[in-house]
Image: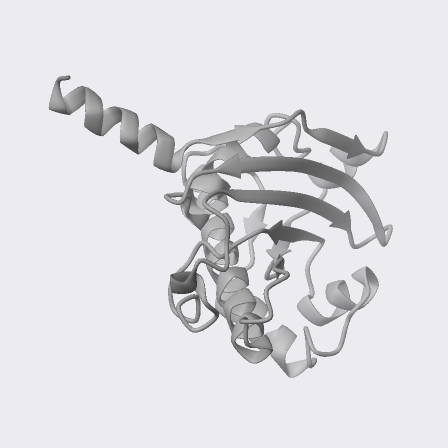
Length: 208
């Protein structure tokens, strides 16, 4: 078999995500409220890595989840910023350094904050939040420490993503996008976010 074909096939197997049907929720006034947002903030995603193995160190697992959360926040910001530069997004995106500094000062995420509290702390018109549940880590770092090399995680990765936008003026959720993916060992935060946002943006009020 042609080596180029083999390489292409292996790349697709390693990197592609197969997605089930997404569930989308939005309020009747979602588009109107989103259009009124001047600035929104991207909250660091809450990441859960699922494992039943007793080999996994809890502190290392927590560290890895934090690493994944930071990586996903960066990828979401980069994706949205690119669309902003292309003229496809009217709203301003609060820079991550400001967002994370304000959240840290408020004691988040150790001290949970409501949507209203997040809005007050960050001083924005809207907040984008994300919850991610995965069967194994996507990034390096603490991943080795929590037993990846011992085969703790399965050969594939199932990822459930719930992406939401809340309006600070009305203090309510206006849009939510739920999707479940399964992908090979080559899956990365960047690939997941690219696929997620490519699909989700078609129904996101910021782009409607």
